Image (tube, rainbow, N blue to C red; front, side, top):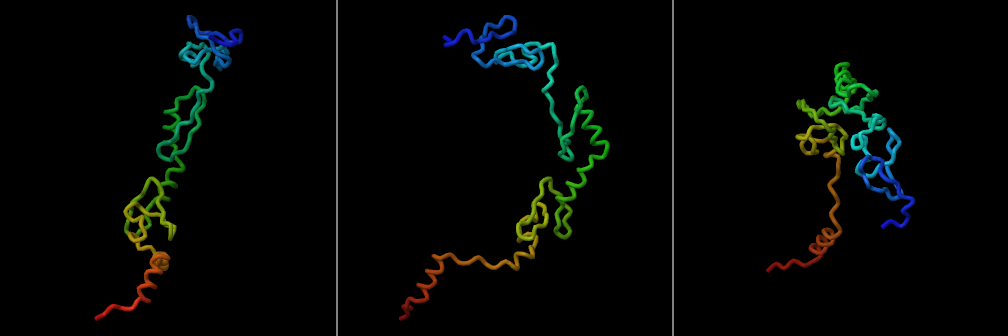
Amino acid sequence: KMEFPDLAVPCSYRGCTEKNDFLPFTCTGCSKKFCLEHHRHEKHECPVPPRDDRYAPVCPLCMQAISVLPGRDPNAIVDEHIRAGCPTAAVRTRGNACTFAGCRAKEFVPVSCKLCKKSFCLKHRFETDHACPSLAKKAPPPASMAASAAAARAAAAPSAAP
């Protein structure tokens, strides 16, 4: 049982007996109040088309969002964009080409070496696979403190030779 029955608003959909507790849904088209089940435009057969159902399709080649004016077909807009040359597609593809000598592979996602900062394919992504010049310059990692202590103890211990 509701605590404040006078504040509840009944759903405007014909035949619905649901009462909305304090927070009914107001339709952006017809401005009527609806319950959770009938608040969408298609559920209450709203005579006014939805104004807020907008989206920007993404071009599958250049991954750029394309604006669509109301009343235009999104598929036709994307098709026009691709036929116009899809200006950023060539730039993104070239940036992900492998820089290893003789390799012509291109990756969808850029893969770069952390040491030399060059772009490589998945086959040549590791420093040892592309003979990274920074790998030769990189000093070997210092021994851990435990390894240093063990080496010092071994050097200080008298040898047990017969």
